[in-house]
Length: 195
Image 1 (cartoon, rainbow, N blue to C red):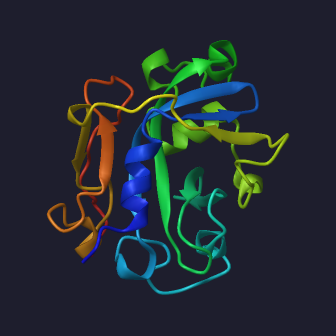
Image 2 (cartoon, rainbow, N blue to C red):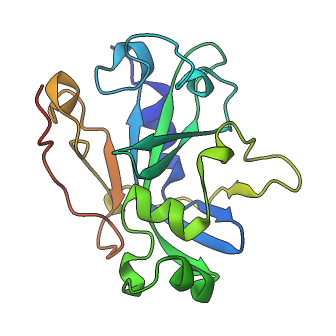
Image 3 (cartoon, rainbow, N blue to C red):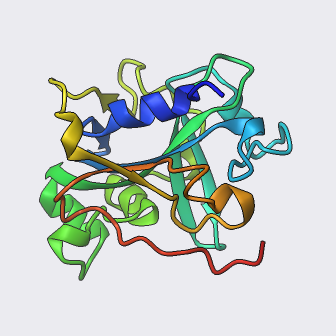
């Protein structure tokens, strides 16, 4: 099976900078999801009102609400009509530190954007940002690619966090990618949800 486009894009997103409402975060951890061919993906069972943004166009933000309290965001990256996205899991605040501290009151600096829900809070991303074009002029949330390539030995991969059932199989889906040695990378946890 050829490598899904989301896996290649996930690697490229490491080191990119996500800007949101006065805060910028350099991405240090991401997870790839390959739509209908991936049992861990929100699009595994097809298109719904919730996951419609995942089906394109690429370069948009797919946001969803989880556990009744957290917003998480994904970079949509497949050809239009084919669901594919990369969950933006964690990063290091590189601009707007005081504002990120205000949004995440009481958190240590290393934890400001360490984890997908913390990342969205630090950046001021909410469900209302679902579908935003990250390349649009004047967008409230935008993405800047990294300026130079990363040595391949800096990029690590492993099982996705919190994915249960077949999609959580780290041998079949080692689609979590992170920058080695970065303190902002979240801790790996096996899913506790029933398969």
